[in-house]
Length: 152
Image (cartoon, rainbow, N blue to C red; front, side, top):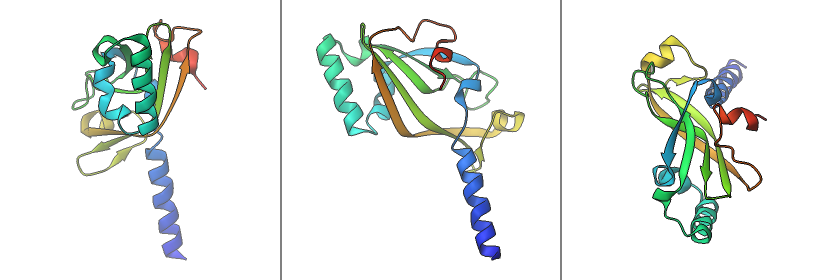
């Protein structure tokens, strides 16, 4: 019975750590699609769709402007880092990429929310379980804060 309780506690702790709410990070910042290449490469289907959109728009990845949430300078080791959600403008066609964000310290400790301890000790961010949508009816990059219009 004790083993089951420990396993349940670990599961609940891990689950909440995967749900880091990046909308509360407080800033957004621009970048180019080529900066997102490692993230896009995590999904063959997303990679194919992005390559098709680039071909259709006759653009290179360094020509496509994107926006992502940005950790401010108060995050000792993560300041300036961009995280999901991302929105990219392919010239009248917009891509929104969402991911589960996990923020961790060197020792592997995961942070579920923004705190002074997290801002001081967080050293790594991982993004998994990518989802994305395409739209052509609105420019989500007009903002700030552009992400509010896409709250779910």
